[in-house]
Length: 154
Image 1 (cartoon, rainbow, N blue to C red):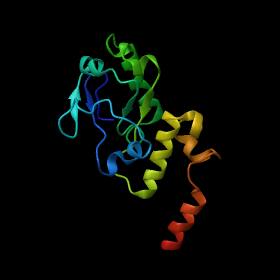
Image 2: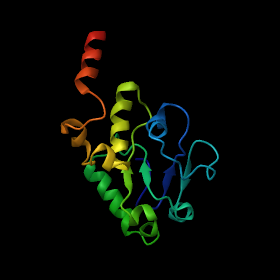
Image 3: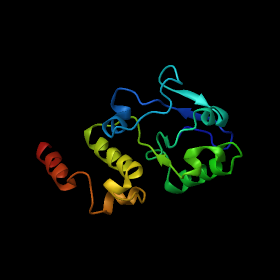
């Protein structure tokens, strides 16, 4: 995560074409920043976030660049901030770990599953962190089949 939670500086990324946001498009997730940001991204503070007041916030690179403990520590800073604590996403505990930008088809399967579980737990199963993707029997795709395809192609 490239944001600076301590100083209230956040990188906001609208959902765009290309592989970096494919999981969101595939799941029909709408973008709160659409129409508010010209270009691929912007650096916003808490007040700007509050002006849009999204019902959920996904932190790009939250799955790929920080541990669970680091992510939770950063989120706690947001909860404790006088303005950050006013955000609907904070109040409703809808602060999610987003995937990385660089993904091929296999990484996309895991990132799509993580996103689906965070946004739609009733349909796809509860999100319990990265361990969920490795150990849960309820999965969005057949891991053995993917492993077989990779092994056969090698």
